[in-house]
Image 1: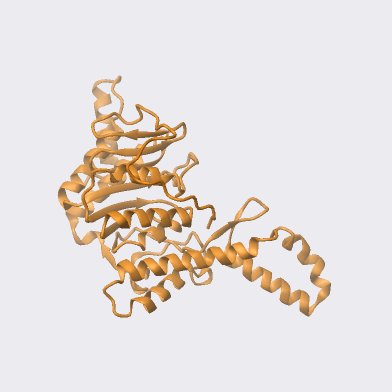
Image 2: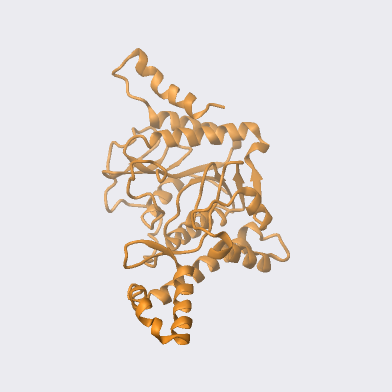
Length: 337
């Protein structure tokens, strides 16, 4: 298997002979995606963002605008099976729901590869698959919603609700504590508590529905199991931290259908080669890449969003704001997790 260093050498080796030659990040990445597809025979889509990069690029979360990219890379795919290679910090639960709904109109069997990490709403997306393929180093994450408060920071919805209940109890027991609680409670806003409750319910209900409909559909006790699994993934207290990874053993213990990436050495090599090549692509301006095995891609960079048709050079033409599509546009959803 080519390591990260091997692929880095592959990218820069031509420049040692000719300094004017630029590394072909797109060509190398595309080569490994094509090789993976040739091995599995399944339609393959890559969804990667540069959320672990040190540069702090914007636009790495799952958002409704990603639907344009998902529709673009679905063009020409045959189904019914899809391999989705996913690397994301999460983002909007509503946008994730739109993407899942769309993909499920195209594919009846979705295998989700998590070469490194799919967190928060990306975990929700992974749990909408029929199975998840993870390595020893791979991780999912809790799906408890994070709320933007008046201090400009994100806080767990569960923590906000529990803190409010604690404030009520303490003030009721000892009214003199009101003055100490006022600065904290002032930051809540008139609708924050309702938004917290709604966001928690949304994340849990979506995952419960997807598990029962797809991953657990052959299980006679699928509804009860789906409810218990979604509850565990969404409980802030059970997982201690929104950023704390959930490895494959923990996920499997909760009932998630997880396949070990190491079971098939050739498949592991192919998937990790795609991962390394894509991560190296982020050394440029790209912050998000959605691409299929045919070479059709939708790339978000710091400057613009670009489309790439098979055989074209990535980044040649910006995507027009009203780019035509054969598929209907998704409805607007505004709530944030």
